[in-house]
Length: 395
Image 1 (tube, rainbow, N blue to C red):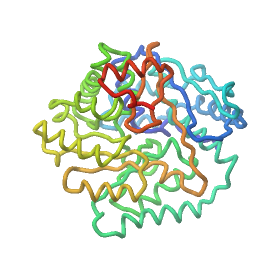
Image 2 (image 1 turned 90 degrees about the horizontal axis):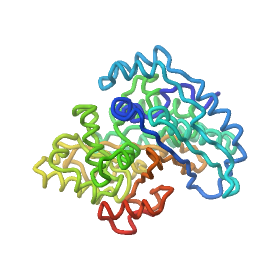
Image 3 (image 1 turned 30 degrees about the vertical axis):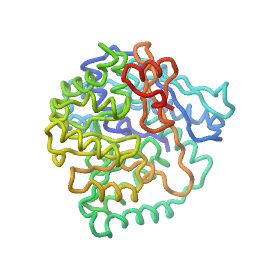
């Protein structure tokens, strides 16, 4: 079975960003780079198998039923759905080879028009995960189901968490496509209303779930090169998003150049316009307190806004965050690897990040050490200076 069976087998925010790119920056050219953060992983031994899976991915097309599903999403515009009807992923934009720098590692890069490469990231990561686990582990689905049911019970059977809601955000680091599709209805049945859907568009369609997602880091990163000024890149990106969606899909991502810089840019206009913000690095409790105070300082009722937490969550952390913020705002939790890759073997920590746009370096200055990724150290220094950030913001 191929690791990817549908071009919808990716996160919703890839399509929402792709639509904005089609309408506003169809000529932008970008570069992405892969990194395995887990030490001692020899992926190069499986490079031929990864290569074959990429070939299979690039042979996929959207089916008529899939296009009808996308077209019915309230925020999808007709011309974007028509474009997807002509779309396919082109292998020529991928460079995959064994690393010449680190034995056992692979060098994987994606370079090409943003519009035609944006859908590569999530399925490529899912492919690498699945190839690794199918060759190095023996799947214990019974153990996976036992762990999944135990997690569901921690929310379902404990008083005080009846209004706690979680969604699946785990496509890119899942154990396998089969397990992902198998565990989602199990989790829905176990949690009922406490499970609100998935970021995966394919499984949302197949299982009648709600797809979730708005924007990812790459969207705001690209505007570091798209201009007009680097210092204004976050403001321009958020304005661009508002122009595309006119108040829909109103969750902003707060950690592309650190929370301090985000709060300076996320002024009263954005506080009132956006439904809420998403956390993806740094201390979530500190982040949430600061965000709610920021809304209040901008004369916005914090209880009317949504805080979305999505950084390395497990059920225990979800419960602690829910207990801390409950009653102060609306809450949403996106749980990833903890749901889709917990069958016993240790998950891989792998990422694909945008590193250039229109020939210029771009970067994320994470609030968590080790999450930043850039191929130009000088640019990181400049980026910190422009946004008035301390020298140790990126690691």
